[in-house]
Structure formats: C-alpha cells, structure tokens
Image 1 (tube, helix red, strand yellow):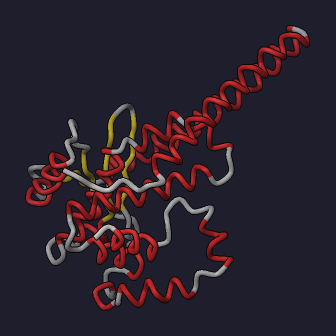
Image 2 (cartoon, rainbow, N blue to C red):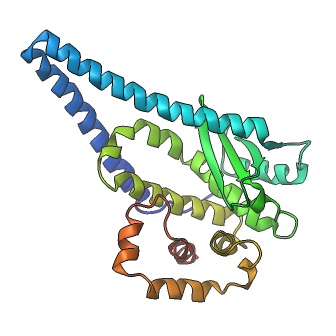
Length: 256
C-alpha cells in the first residue's frame, strides 16, 4: 500500500546518521589521543567513559524491562481468542503494510489516559493501546483502527531501530525531538491510509477526550491554534517529541 512519508523524516534521519558517525569518531579519536598522555590516565578516562555508557544502557534497559513486565503481566493480549474481530482487523492492517512479523498487541488500563505506543524489546516489536481508546471499538471502530495503524507505522518505518542505532546523535540539541515529530507525521499518514474516514476524529479524541470529541469542530480547533501560535508556543514545541495536535490535523488535510 502507498502512504506519504513526511518530507523531513528522512532529512532528519540523515542528519542523525552524520552526527552519530561524528560523535563516535570524536570519542574514538579522543581516546586515542589519551594514549599519548600516559597509560594510567588513558585507562582511567576510558574506564569513566565505559562506566557512564554502561550506566545509561542499563538505565534504558531497566525501564524497558519494567514496562514489558507491566505489559505482559497486567495487559490483556488481543488475539484470535480475545477480541477476535478487532484482532482480525489489526492483522489485516499489518498485512496491508507488508509487515513480516505482526507485533503482539496488548490492552492496558492507565488511569483513563488516551494513548497507545509501540516498543521494541529483545529484538521483537510490541504495540499497546490504552483501554480508554480501545473501548471505543464498538461505537467508533475507525478511530481505534487509526490509532493502531499509527503505531504499526512506527514498526513499518523501523523508527525504534533507527533511533537505537543513532542514539549518539542525541547530544545535538533539538535534533532527536525534531526527528521524532517528523516520524509522528509519517505515522499519522499511515493511519490515515488505513483508516481515512476517522483520522482527524482520532486526533481530536486525543485533544478533547472521549466524552466530547465528537462535538469539537476540527476547523475551528485548528484556526484557534493558529491564532494562539505565539513565540512561547513555538519555543515549547522545539522540545516536544510529538507535534501539536492541530498541526497533525493540518498535515492530514494537506495530504488529501
């Protein structure tokens, strides 16, 4: 199937690759120069670098272990025997995207939050959807399909893998957040390709909540956001991993 890749996604990824190479090269060159200052000092510095690298790696892995433990320990796995109708639609979307391995899908309760996420652990992809979103599958199925298709988009585009291998580029201010926002636009486009009827409604849902989202006027919402696009809003947006929801709506409408 065809979908629109956001114009900045590949650009930012290329920049991340370049800076990853430069950062790694700089570290290697710096460690090589230390050898000229004496074996003791070089060994000490290398030890510090390795310690902090291992500490960061262990912290990230620990967080993932806790999250995966919660997901598999408490989550309801959506499968052929658990919500089979939705699982069949989820599988069909994975097949439409050409995924060789369909990520296991889990339903989790998270205090009424409206969200979903994709995670990669031990070489396998997983998708989780919060119950507040999934509970709409009977009354507004396409909204749920959009949310799930968006997360499958991260798997299709290998965003999790790419971010792992370009992690050193995170030292560049704002670059990681900018790449993440571009990825979100692309995944919205993938969601829209698989559930075109309710893509905008799904984004409004995330903004307004399930009780009133159907009463929100998307055009007015976007227009008001443009009026409120002050310097403070723009500055805060530089640090965000996700674009503002009105901008995501505009991105979808631009592709129509």
